[in-house]
Amino acid sequence: MVIGRINAFYEAVIPIRLQDVKGIVHEFTAVVDTGFNGTLTLPSKTIALLGLPWRTRGSAALADGSEGTFDIYAATILWDGLPRPILVEAVEMMPLVGMRLLADHDLQMRVQPGGAVKIVAVRKHGESRTR
Image (cartoon, rainbow, N blue to C red; front, side, top):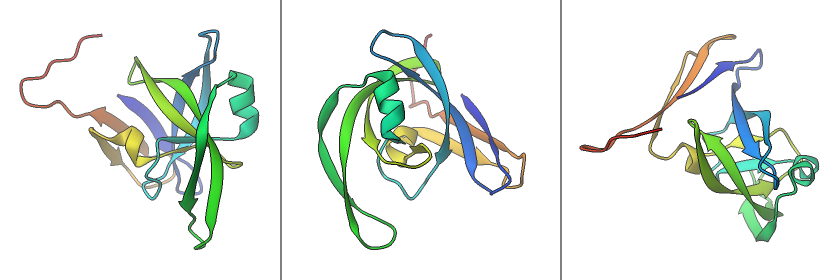
C-alpha cells in the first residue's frame, strides 16, 4: 500500500522511492495525475542525480493541444515495497505518477486538504503476494 495526502492545492501527493544506479534509494514526492497515461515524470535534475540510463525519445499531446517531445529513461521504483522496473519521462515540472504505474491498483482519495490518499494492489483471483 502507498499512502499519501491531499495538499492545500487539492493535489493527491504520494511518496515515491527510486533507486539510483548504485542501488541507493532516494525518496521524492509526486502528484497522482489520472490524465497522464504514462508511468512517472521526473525533472532532468533528478534524473541526473539518480544517474538513470537514457532509453529513447517520446512524444505526447499536451493539455494545451501542443505536441511535446521528451527523453525517456529506465529506472527502478520501490512500489508497494517491491522493486519494479519502469520508464521515466523527463519533464521539467513536479514529478507526476501516471495511470500505467497505477495499473492493477485501487486508488482511494478523501478529497479535502489533509485527506488520505491510498493506493492498494488489486489481487487477482487465486493470486497471493509474498514480500
